Amino acid sequence: MAASFTFTHAICRTPSISSVDGLRAVDTGAPDLATFRAHHADYVAALRATGANVTLLDALEDFPDSTFVEDAALCLPKGAVIMRPGAPSRLGEAAAIRPAIEAAYGPHMRQISGPGHIEGGDILVTEREILVGKSARTDAAGVWELRAIVSDWGYTLRELQTPPDVLHFKTDCSLLDADTILTTRRLAASGCFDGYDLIYTEDGEDASANAIRFNDAVLFPAGFPRTAAALDRAGYNVVEIGNSEAAKLDGGMSCLSLRFSPPT
Ligand code: GLY
Image 1 (tube, rainbow, N blue to C red):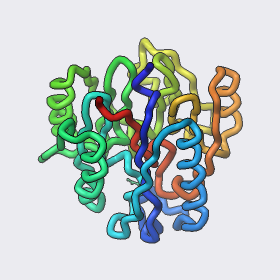
Image 2 (tube, helix red, strand yellow):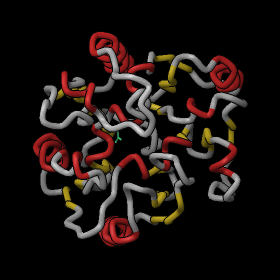
Image 3 (spheres, rainbow, N blue to C red):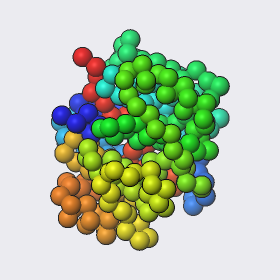
Image 4 (tube, protein in one colour):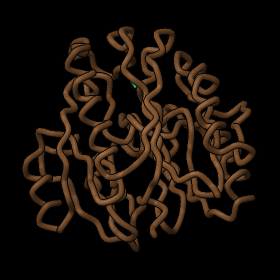
């Protein structure tokens, strides 16, 4: 079984009322909470429909971006790492996610202690390696500390650069299977995915690059019909989920869950 996209468990967190104050690069208006929660419920249901056990954590009003749980931890087959978010308003999310990770991973858990910063949105785990894009949220010191931890577990980490003005590395790419990555042309142009098979987002649909392969499904943001059709033609089971409200906070499919199979 491919550990990079086959999972028994996921963790999600209900969007908080305070999510209307979440971080955003460009203000296109506050998310509508009812719609955001309805989309989130669809997302959780889609994960569960694959047979996974999904833990839904309570909303955290002190942290407007905390529904984007992916940024606070990295879950790998051999262990989990609590991240150190680079956005000051998100730093406390690391402690908030810790109990849920500890419950799943027990002693197989480590923590980025700093002074560097790193967010899960900048990390793409493939079957071969762990790709980490430095960004406004993830710096060299954070990558260095993560490399030391995952090297202990036998993983290879490759340091890359997130394109300028792109929030996270995975804003622009997603793993589709052991060999295939969905990517924007602007990210792939760096050559960072040489050796992988690539499917490109269609012109004008770069905002669809953030999807997740989760067991037999590809959870994909609604509203990008040509890229969805390309994935369908390639044989993927595309499950479209509304993402209009999360997108106002620069959030996408990967941001909304931590996906893992606990170590045995
Ligand atoms: N609003 C999500 C983030 O900026 O981290």
